[in-house]
Amino acid sequence: MSTTVTTWSLEQTSHADLRPSAVPEGDLRIVRAEVPSPEFSRFLYTAVGGDIHWTDRLDMTYAQWEEALGRPGTETWVAYEKGTPAGYVELEAQDEGSVEIVYFGLIPAFRGRRIGGHLLSYGIARAWDLAERHPSLIPTKRVWLHTCSKDGPHAMDNYLRRGFTLFDTRTEQEPETAAPGPWPGAHG
Image 1 (cartoon, rainbow, N blue to C red):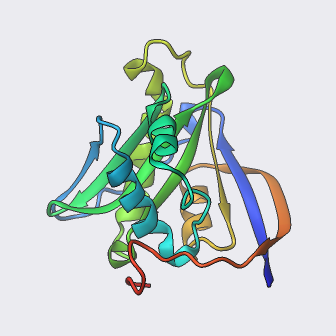
Image 2: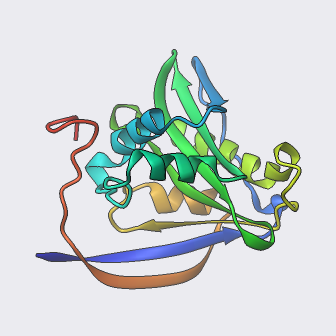
C-alpha cells in the first residue's frame, strides 16, 4: 500500500533572512551534543520521528550512524526542558557553503509549548555560524531543509515564520511503513 507525500524544500540565502522566535518561558536550554553518540542520536530520531513516520535511518547500522555523525560540520543541538530532552536539530555541512538542517523536531510530549520556534531559530543561527566552530569549512552561504506532508501540522508555518522561502515542491507515492518510535507502543 502507498500514500501520496508532498515534499517542500526551503532555504535562506542570507543570515539576515533569519527571523527568530521569542524565547519561551521556563527552564529551557539548548546544548550541543559534542561527542557523536549513535545511541543518543538514534533515541532522538525515533522519539521525535516515530509518530510522523521518519523511517530513513531505522535500518542504519551502528557504523553508519558513527559515519553520519562524525562527518566534519555535522552537529546535533538538543533542547532540554528541566533537564529532559525535548527535541533536537541536526546540521550537516555540504559543498560550497551550504548547510542542511537534516533533522528537526520535538518529542510529542513537548509539542505545542512554544519550544519548536525557539529551537529552530537557534539551530538556524548555528547553521549560519557553523564555520566558526569548524575552521576547515567555508563560511555558510545557504541554509536549507525539506519538510513533507507527513510532518506535524505546524512545521511549514514555523519554517516560513523563521524566514525560509520555498524553492522546490515534489509529490511522490511512498510505501506505507511502520515507524515504531523509541519502542513499540510508544506515545503517538
